[in-house]
Length: 98
Image (cartoon, rainbow, N blue to C red; front, top):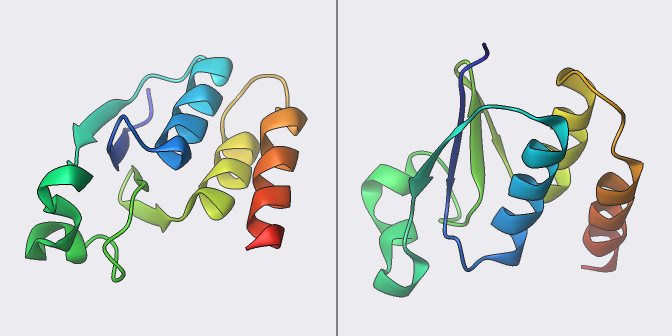
């Protein structure tokens, strides 16, 4: 089993996208809540994970990745199972729009 830790707020659509991909791949992971409504992303502990104080952040066996647009293709590549073109393409379209 790989060590996957997802830092994020359940109300975030970006965190939800990563969670959907993890579920689709059948991956076991731990989610550490980071409450956006309470300002937790701006606390030093989370700022050390993400320099802009955003969610989600993914830690995969010590390799830390920020931003859904980077996390989704990474997970799709490294996790076993069918490729998740639907989620990855959706993420890429959203990121290109920004």
